[in-house]
Amino acid sequence: MADPFTARRTALHARLIEALVRAFLGLPDWRDPAPFVAVAVPILRGAQTAMVGLTDAAIAAMLTRALRTPVAPAALDPAPIIDAVRSEVTPEQAYRRPFDDLWTALHEDRPLTEAVELGTVRLREIAETDLQITYSHAARAALTRSPAADKVTGWRRVLRRSESCALCVIASTQRYHVGDLNPVHPGCDCEVEPITSADRHVIDRALLDAASKAAEDFTGSYPTREQLRDVLLSITREHGEHGPVLVDPRHRFTGPGDPPTA
Image (tube, rainbow, N blue to C red; front, side, top):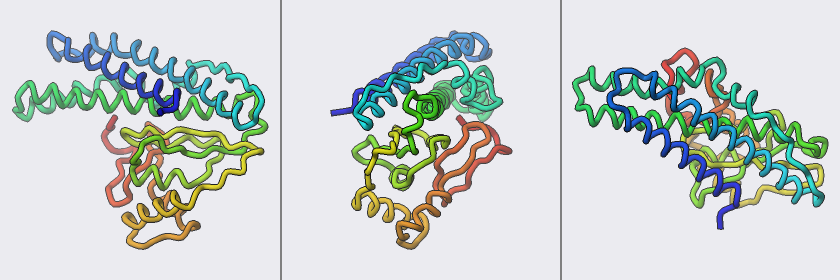
């Protein structure tokens, strides 16, 4: 059975993408992004506001269970968290990007249906990334501003899928400082779980073995537990717009100087 927060978070992602895609496909034409952007940005902000509230409540519930005493939510203000999601890029700029993909496809003489589909795919990626990063920022804020913040010593990355990708498995073996953002990658649904001063949790052997096998695919050699941290550093990059992201070290990483993605 899925964790209640996981289920709500998944449903929120689905509702946001459904609403944005419906608005995009419902346009009479795709010559001018302004009408779509005017609709998309308020929808996005509403979903982000909901994500901040859900995350705040989820972190409080986790701390309540860990400390065995009631812990109230941090009562986070969504505005500064949402504003920090894309660094200096505005939502208005980001949600013009599906049109750039669509126009580029048309310039390449692709059929309109194919061009619209490419724009839709880009839109889904942008919306998914925005909510992922909103969750990362909200989780950090909830941990640092919680009434029980003095009991929080760090956090761990929790795998939620029955089969998680190699990047997430490796990242889940480490403990993180409270001030660290959860690195994201497209389609990731990992969650942040606080570590408290009362926590005696030890990462299980099976997870370490799975992470080492995943790291072997990237590096060509089976790493020790100590070397896993070096592998994690090799798969974590700082994106100029999104913050920390997980990337396959065998692939070229797109940095701040490259054309924007999601």
